[in-house]
Structure formats: C-alpha cells, structure tokens
Length: 137
Length: 137
Length: 137
Image (cartoon, rainbow over all chains, first blue to last red; front, top):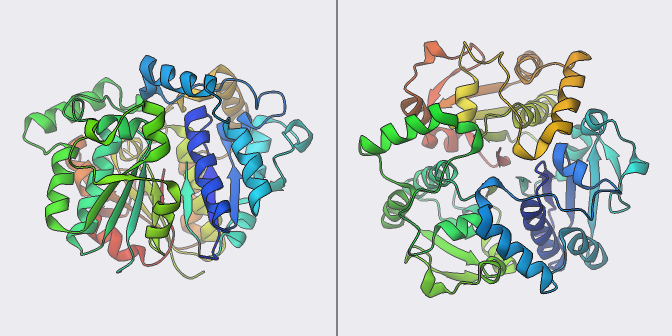
C-alpha cells in the first residue's frame, strides 16, 4: 500500500486525462504516492496556454458521449486539471514531463502549467516507480 | 500468482474489449482472480441493450483490420461478452462499474448486462487490487 | 528490480510503438528483462513487409503532432523498430507474437520481422511475467 502508483500518460484527450486524474486523486486520498510521467499528446495538453482548452474525446465517444461529457461539465464537474490540483493538495503527487517528449514538441518547462513539477528521463521514472503499479493511459 | 489481475477498461471498441476478455479468460484459467473496473466507453458497451451490437474498432484497424475481425466472427469466434461469460464460469472474475462513469452516462445498474456484478468507486477498486498487476485498456 | 517489464502491445500507430520502444530500451539499459507480447494492430505493424512503413499516429496528434514527429524523424531520430533492435543488443528483450492475433491476421511467423522471437499464447506470457510490471499500450 505504500508503493507508489505510476502513471505514464500518453493520450491527450479529455476523457482519458479525466480517467487518469480520478485514479490519481483516489490513490492520493488513500495516502498512496503517485508518480505521473507525461509523454506525447498528454504532455502537449499540459501546456500553459492549452491546459484549459477542449482536447477532444476518444473516437468511440461519438455524439452521445460528447453530450454526456458536456452535460457533466456544465453541471459543475471539476476538469481533469482541477482534479489533479486537488490531488496535489491531498497527497503526494509528482508530475514529470518526459525529456524525449519535450524535445519532440520543442517546448521548455516554462511553457508548461505549474502542475508539472519537472522534466526527467525514462530511467529516473523507473527508479522512482519502485514495486508499485505501472499504468499506461 | 495468487494476486489478482486488475483491469481498468476504458475503451469501448470491440478489438480492445476482445483483448481484455482474452487476458481475463487466460488469467481465470490459471486460477488467478480478476477484477474488472468499467469506465467511460467500456461501461457504455456493457449496457444491456448494446452489449451485442457492433462497437467499432480502433482507428488504425482500417478496412483490412475490419475484414479480418469480421472473418473470424463469421468463422465462429466467441464475442468478447461470450468470452467473459466463459471466464466467469471458469474462475473468479468480478466485474464492477465505476460509480463516476455511471453518473456520467446517466445509467443505473438495471441498465447493464448481468455480466456486471455491481457498482463501486475507485477506492474500493484499489482496496481489492492488492499487489497484482493493474492494466488500463 | 530483477523482475521483468511486461508490455502488451495492442496499438499499431507509430507514436505508441515509439513510446513502447523507449520504455523497452530504458528498462533494457537498466538491466531489466523485457517481455513484449504483440496483439492486433501492433502485431500487424511488425510484418516484415510493413515494419518500415508509416503506421500513422493517434487521432489526437493532429496536423501539428504529425509535423513534430516528421521533423524529429528527418533530424535523425531512430524509428521504433531501430530502437527495439538497439534494446535487444543492450539487454534481455524477448518479443513474442500472440497466437490468437496471428490467427486473426492470418499470418505465420515467416511473415514477421526477425525482431519477433516467437509465437506464444496468453498463458505463456503470464508465466513469464513474474511479479514485474504489466503494461498495455
């Protein structure tokens, strides 16, 4: 139970990021440390000037899925970014950008939302993962 | 080996659900308990009135992938729902709907196929996961 | 740390395969054995006559993501297949095709790139996974 939850976030759609945020918040609330490693399109979604924008949904959501997500948002559901901010207040959540993906997107840490704590390589991510679960989203 | 396999199913396409069903059936056949947690579009696919429908494939399947999947189905391959039913007969498979996703889709347990054993939150899912593998599909 | 990293590769787009290759190479460089299990569209991408082709990107990449990926490739970034070849030179990386997916795609091992070491069922994959991380990509 003291082993961290390790999330590799690859996908940049709002539904997968929300699922990741809920897994993070749940673990943080239970006192479990969470290591988040941002790659590719998930990293792109954490850009300071894009984090509050609409990032679309998985293709299978369709028109009906879109409607459900919009309805819940209008009813006051916290966005994934807000949920992650709350999770950081609640527990030990460390969010790192993958250095290779930073190169890919040609961005620097100043371009990222303050939710992101730093930049690291995959080796550092493995070192911190310990024996906890590793999940790719 | 006695630790459970823990699957978070997010995606609602037939190919990913089939991959999940095969991982479930393999674990069940080996005497490994399996906890399945249904979120978002995977949960939607377990609706009583939709479970037998076509739920599409991942975008990269393309026309050729579609053809292969249809061919195997016509040749008698069990659907993912049938494979999960067999896995439940074979071993200890517990399928729970994520309570947040139930709210999102505005459905109740009576709307779901009897394959689904109940509704729970993410904390309960973590409590049952133990030290087994956790996989997000 | 001696437990293997176990990757189930399902997705067949170049971005996810690159992410998987980087996770594999990082683990191999740290002396961690890696078991890769190829299913569905990931397996299709390992066909001898397709492995060097363009396999597209996740839908959310968009035009801008496509541009970034092409730019890095033209700047000399190794492809995912090359990265996996290097990882095999570096450490203990075993790549197996899922027998059910071989049937689905109607192919034989001779159709696959020599990167693929063999064909096995899901039970064999679980037997080799030990207590290491299991990741679905």
